[in-house]
Image (tube, rainbow, N blue to C red; front, side, top):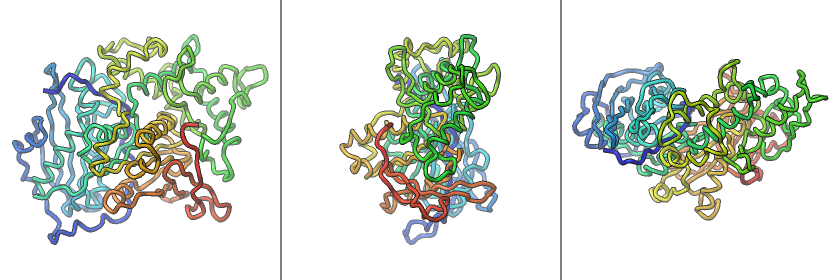
Length: 528
């Protein structure tokens, strides 16, 4: 039985994993690559390895679109909580015929509820020789619906902190059974909820993975949804609950921010929102009434609140950081509802969290975001934050095991503020005494002009798996990663992204869309 602690966590988007190059040779052990035998999985041994009842539901052969043959194993892990509630984690593991003895686990998104690689999203990694697994975090449903967790301890625990650990145990046991070889290196790559899952692994299960990539992590999950996303929704509603800042106002702000902050290279990218000062009041319409090219007084007031950290009625910060300058192009959908009666994506997510995850006793489907008062109710979030959050700075066991951690965040993220990730990393630096000591095992990369996990005007495609593998296996600490922007199958922009706090600066000559014309430069520390 699982103990009483009901650890839980947050948001997610399927990891936008980009892999490039060849997988490299198998380990030099003098033997040919192991050939998987799909029929060799023993359920009894599997349950003992996982510590929970585990059953292989199918084991078949398949092939990727590129023709790579693999063993396709589906399994279910039954999780039982103290109150006898149960949750079943459904997972998929793909083992290529020419396995390179590296295992990659991909994180989920939102509330999950499906297996990210159930279609073809893991095939590119399989083509490179990696075994790939992912899971549904213990329930079946849509990624924006949290009702699966309603008064269900097992479902809350599984989604919150157990699913990725159990999947890792099961996948490694299956790999050993079907290949008769142990896993040489294990990697986890995830963004958003997947980024939170990545940090859960580093913090709570430090022996599962050798290298971890955590993108745009929802690591303060139980505070993020109500106090950041939910507060923005409430700030943007008038007395009749009508939106104040709409798509038109967001477009006005986007133009104003770019005019003030686009920098030396006019490419539509705010290189670093921390180095620009912009006051929405400069866009105030004469008389304070909104017009096509300016803002109403009410819209200016909301924009100022959104760019600032959310605060309670006494002005105290509720969450570290507001929306970054340069994120305005991504507000529609994430922060601004596209429906005249519905909530924005962030607001709807916050309401689901409040109904089914945020409190020790779930208020249920009749609870509304409007019932939540940040000033009054913020303290009530602490109990379940212990279940879901991945915000501890204690990475001692992971570091001692030789683990390597890469964090990244888009500097134009309109859903999860990058300032929270910057704050977390600075807190880790404080724990380990210096930036140099921290960078021996954990590094942060800030991607200019990138929205939530991907998208935006900036270069958003990075070979994170290649970078974490090079660091983990060959000791090549990544001073920078190469980020690219692809449109219509063509790379239109490339830029180096240096490890925080360095940033890229255009050297003033040549094509600014070519990475070779950018150099490292000192960047600001912290959120401001």
